[in-house]
Figure (cartoon, rainbow, N blue to C red):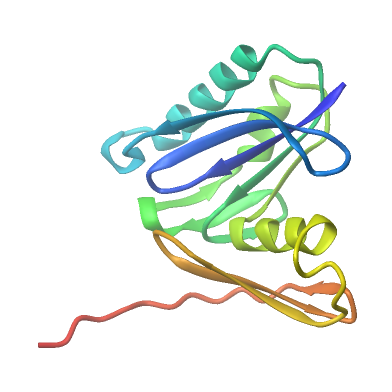
Length: 157
């Protein structure tokens, strides 16, 4: 039995089988323009279900990372694809009778690096992500500090 890790971005969805040591055993990545769909939530769930079926493995839990402000299993502001209050955990729990978790994608990446990667030896660390957006995770005393904020950029001429 394996864990599934899902990375949802503004332009892609990646779904992977992950072992207890953080190793990716198999991965499916799809480029998709989520902002072009009317029902983005439905499309995201459809892709996730299709990917898990294609991976063909018995799953013990699902962990999801996505951009935006995430609290209590709900993506409150998925700003790069203009979506609010997406209860992805509840949507997937209707299909799977297993634990489903969701966190900000930068926090997820930081946790992965803290557990298995380059910052595991440090009690205090800052982990930054730069992609479609900019994010980060802050660790103080080996604990993730949950800080939710939004940066908006404004063009000047």
